[in-house]
Image 1: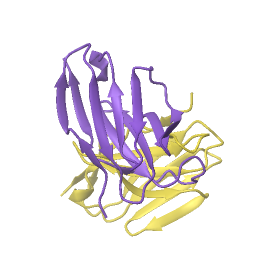
Image 2: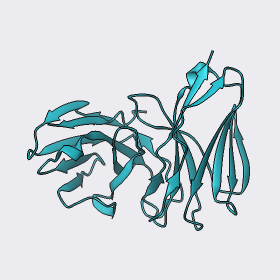
Image 3: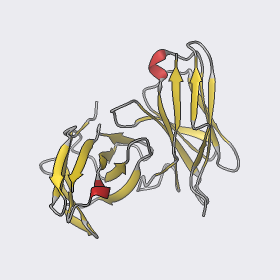
Length: 111
Length: 116
């Protein structure tokens, strides 16, 4: 059973600081990794995806992938109260049609 | 460009009843996936439809079934509802089916089902 693990939080970060969210996965063969943001009562929305080891930056967001250690992280720089949400990590499994999801980390940005 | 739309947004059913949820995919997308999200959990994959055929299924019983229509819209049907079926049901569309490298999903707002 392939698994994706996230700390449920809540993770509380002061406004303007860096928020660091982590995710580990069990299938060493996983190739594609996704971070989604979900506001309370809303549907998930894609923040970014990463395929290769290393860092990928998009605005205030940086995804980091380490396949040897089987973890992927998301850094949010200059955190804003509007970043307060649940962040879901998802990993593509063997097939092209299925994503395996973590339970999400609740992030709270305190003004 | 229209996004993914789902209906109804909320509904209440009783145990044993049947429910149909509907989804219109984003313009240009030909693949629809359905997910179940219980409170405080990540989405669980139910199945995916591509070119009107189911091309992948998660660990859900046969009483969960679906359809995809020629315009790529889709339905999720659940028979013999159980209390544990209470959840947010998410439809997600994407372009490309089996051979698509990236599962870049666009989600609808969801249908919240409560089973009493």
